[in-house]
Length: 409
Image: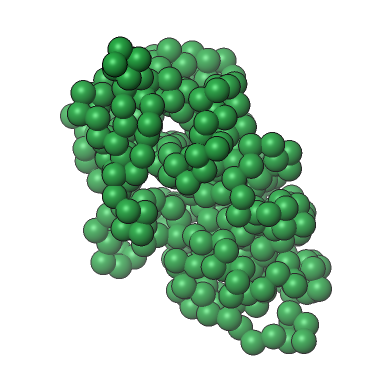
């Protein structure tokens, strides 16, 4: 039976964040599958790595829903929202190019290196805070505070606003108290209102933060409307935080599950950048599925996708394609094939350089500071937040020995 003739397979949200479970259900004989997404939306789900790379760069597949079949409209509320739909995520060329040209200045190599000393200072302070206890809860004590502080400082979010900022970040990503989609829309309204005030303040007073830099880039050559400016700043803020939070927590868990690789990193910290890439492949922190709509007929695997049909790409599953990642469940620092955790093509994640910088500094500092890191609870007691936008542990309690104390003993 071809994929086109196969019955539609209903998917659960938890399966989309668990590649082995997802592939066990769908099989690996085909790189594309006829499914119903957790909300019931019909889709072609791409799980093949090579097919996904081609699809992510194929101009016949649009991120905008303008070409979507009308029967899909009930599932696309976010696309119609007055705030969310103005970000790069929901747009294609030429609008995407216009938006990205301005906001990408926030993630240049120069800006990244300028951030390095401050990221190191924040990391050191957080590690100082847990050192004496010999125990920590990674998510709340380390993974959340580091990127939140970095991005809030970088974009000039005042200290007094950061708790509320974090609360609404959680609602948008499905991690907070969400009863229905209206809660997400209300969180979007909060960000819209908040950024309206913050941008107005920067226009009046200026500053050294990234919002001021973006506004400076708009002067005399405005390329973004006011709503596009707010929506894309929101995208940078929330995306940069969530990527790093889950990369740090999921990364520590991955290393604890692979003590030989952990020992290799301790022996050679220069391997940390490779470890970060493998952490991102094994357990992508955000956007486990991306949505696309066919503008014209396009062949993926053995399926001819028709105009208007929905093509979802599972970034988690593609990183487990055994054709390109032999023994995909194995944590291997020597892999050469680039993963798709940050997507590919024009929608490649702008915040990837920041996440990699934070990861490099954090893991090198953690391993230099503490030895004998272990889980403080049985691994079977760990759980995950019910979101398929991000992959977040409920908690990750650890215990450890401070390296200086161990040496003195």
